[in-house]
Length: 440
Image (cartoon, rainbow, N blue to C red; front, top):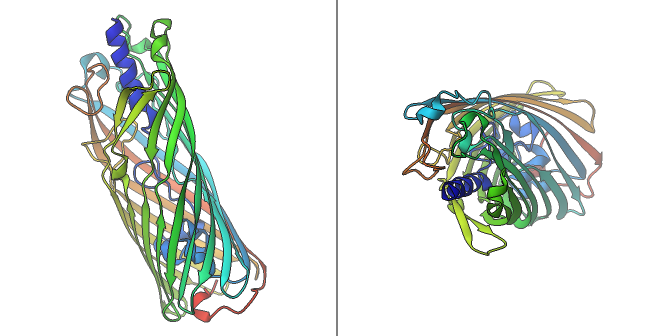
């Protein structure tokens, strides 16, 4: 019995250590894109070329040079995910009767912001803040997949100070550090022999880390009405330190302090903004996220200094393609719309109950209203259509707790509402050439 308990707890702990629940995340796997209410209204198309305003610094820090003077943008985004996991055959007969997950979606409000300040006619400084990763999912405590996940929480926050330099009239570059905080709390059922699955206790893992990476980018404005941008966010290495809590005194040796190394994925963003009429702009966007770098993550006991298990994430790379447009209805009102398609890094080969992700289509609309010469208000709504995905865990699979087979079908969708404002504090220090100045 002790050996069975040990295998079950360690497998459960590994499966929860870094598998960050994101059934409602706006980007693939556990990524988040909610950084700009302007960009959200165009499905983030053209974000790397400044289509998302100053907040586009998340994708490309070089957009800090696009607007003169001292400007700030602040955003709030509500993410309302909805998702279910329905057990199917060949789920273990002792568990399939426990039923499905219920709605695993948990709503969340995410703040983000960016500020740019012009020092002289060549030099800008700025800072962008937001949550690049995370979300929350929570199925029912008693359900058919409980030994593979009962709840998942992750919180992250990144601070990105940048320095931008306008090389000449058509080229700007920028770079800066990315300082990132990462915290998680995860639970799963422990299959104890002799107990009914309806009363299995839970184990948990908590951990946190600070890490540092960098962001860099370039912006090309060859002529008035055209902007092309390329931005890069580096991987951030996290030495996550935390603890595993176990429910029974007999399992106490399996708990205690643990650590794990996680390298977040790099992001490469490309954007194009093109004016096709005096009051109409077309935006295109492409993103590559290097999720495959996560690979298999080892879980190490701090007391013994040896691996106790591993987490076979084994994600693929993620790719996103977007197109959007904005139309100046009047001097005060700008309308926006866009669509994007994302190839998720998760499919049936690596999908778990904690990450029931799939390819998705994002349809978005938005608007901006110029309240005054200094203040602009922005609003966006997006709906994500997420592809249904099959889940299979158990013997012979990467995810296996106690040789308990779980098979299921995951279905989800997400509603996202973003609001924000832009405020201009003062006039520019020095004139900025017309190609670098957007109309609004």
